[in-house]
Length: 74
Image 1 (tube, rainbow, N blue to C red):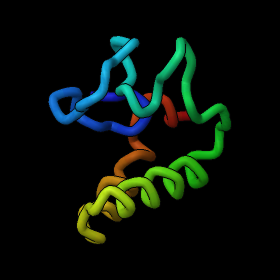
Image 2: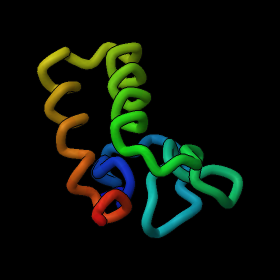
Image 3: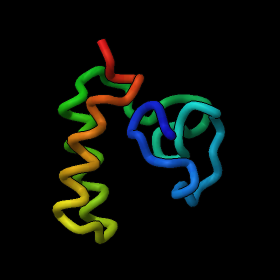
């Protein structure tokens, strides 16, 4: 699982560059989201999930779960 967004690597359709992060979170040798605000990151992820056609309830659940990812633990 991605340590930033918790996406299972089996569901990642892109080319991963990292053992810790999915292809959506880590590109060109760096994390795509540079900030430290988990709420802002959740908003970005939610909007992306909805644009890709994900059900609203699934998107809300997956977005909620992001706060438990290793990257966001304090």
